[in-house]
Amino acid sequence: MPGGWIQRYMKLTEFLGSVLGPDYEVVLHDLGDADKSIIAIANGHVSGRTIGAPLTSVALQSIVNHSYETQDYRLNYVGVAGTKLLRSSTFFVKDEEGRLVGMLCINFDDSRYRELSDRILKLRHPDIFVETNFAYNEEAATVRATPPPAEGSESFPNSLTELTDHLLDEELRSREASGERLGHRDKLALVEILNAKGIFMMKGAVKYVAEKLGCSQTTIYRYLNRMNGGAEGGEG
Image (cartoon, rainbow, N blue to C red; front, side):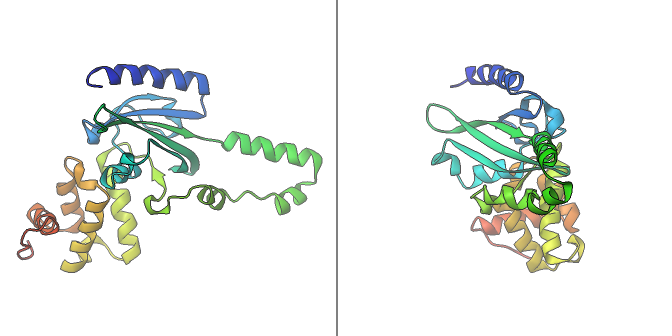
């Protein structure tokens, strides 16, 4: 599929965006540059992203755990864009040898349809009846329909900084600490988690994580070397 797949899928992205309409964001990622992987996007107002935005944490996880090797797509998992919950799906674009070269993603914002559903119900029933008996718990409903909890929900960063902040803040909140206050063992454990999530596939991630954790880039590389079977050495 060398060369030609990008043009074909760019046209498909444009086509799907036009056919499905403004509530469906259609995104094409080229994995040749994970930092600026979006090469085509239709209805980008749904997530607020533009061409040149990076891969998402869920996309990185799919690469790291090689889930694309046993499945051709993922359907209806949770996407979070600001205060909106989206219904997200991803098609894995592979070459003739089965290597992952891109991703075609569709993110559906169904909020307008849910609002319309509420209005229709209220035409037939008193408001208090609808609010009491037909309350829509967005997060619970979406998560129940989304089997793979290990990969979590998907956020839509516009830059490496946003992506790294999202993943770092998530882990730091669970430890109730700031990066600078973490001890050596905690920093090592945090880098191991971030590495498993694929963040260090992104150019500049080592430098940014080092700044957030209050340590040197050499220390981060030392941690990564230890995870790959090398000797650790001391704190830097």
